[in-house]
Length: 310
Image 1 (cartoon, rainbow, N blue to C red):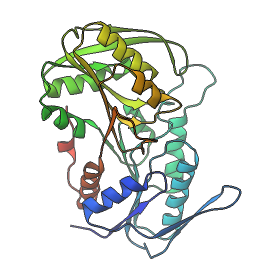
Image 2 (image 1 turned 45 degrees about the horizontal axis):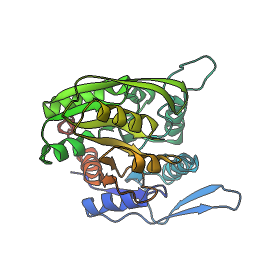
Image 3 (image 1 turned 180 degrees about the horizontal axis):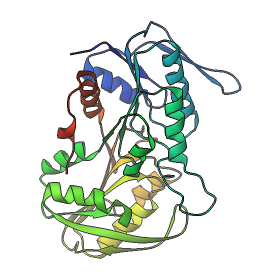
């Protein structure tokens, strides 16, 4: 068993990095991350990492400084002769740009993968990519984890009865189906139409939710518009309660205010992204233990297939 590795925390989510380090009973490596007056970032490792495996923990949500900081930390580790460099990216930014859905548009997810590979990353550990095919954009191994690892056991131990799983849109059908299968319950699907980005024009629910305790599952809460509309429609159809379970809580703009005013009874998110402010309806579940187990599996070259619901 090889445990000659170090943990490095970027600045985007130091709280999660500290929790992972605590789970592994290992200190975070001392690193200076400097920022010049004009915004340029410089990374300096305060001790030798020559010949060691370096795990850099840095989700890449907005602003773009977070991805730049990760790239520079990878470059610094490569130039310091690290044996391997593993980017632990709990939230992978730009994942919603996974294809050309109209002419003359970018595929931002592929660009991010190219940048990480060029910088010198050896492996990527990430969670709930917006599109599974992004794994194929990399030329290095990718360990793609899911928040279902923490959410499904939580539901099983909750004591909630008469549960139904729902997806707020058709794109999340596979995810919702995985939850429904693991929990042996019914499935409902939302069908939405957009007039423009981040704005839902209409939303219908396909499935029976009357007298059910409904759990909406998704990968991202951004503006919370779709989520709140889906919850309202489900409640109109006679649901007993409506909760949401989402891996990544971006909560852009007035998203938390929307949730406060919504019919949602509770919203559960993971700590891949720090919560912007406390919200009575939002509960944060940590994925530190899951990520720490995967880091050990990478070091010990052991299987991680037991961490998947199929």
